[in-house]
Image 1 (cartoon, one colour):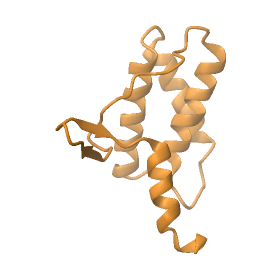
Image 2 (tube, one colour):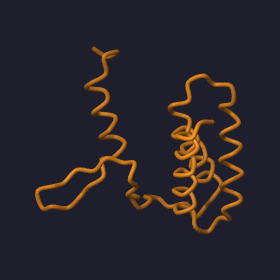
Image 3 (cartoon, helix red, strand yellow):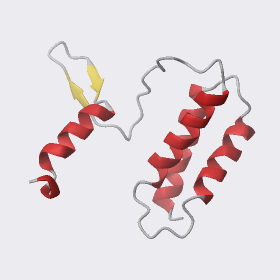
Length: 109
């Protein structure tokens, strides 16, 4: 795991701890480590942090009855923001990012 991936995993850890404050951080850490082991030996590592976060959140949502129905949006420095006409900064959702990517993807042209 390179420094960039390690930083991204730290961001994932922070997000999950914020999203599930009732759970012990050690439990979340164990889940992240278990999810990371699934990707050992993979050559392409660009999306590993995203996949680890989704797998961990899915597991926690399925096992934690107090999981948030609609988690609060978390503004992190890694997410692009846009300024609206009223001057309020808004985070681009993953759905919006997907739309941006789909329209610019050379594989879909």
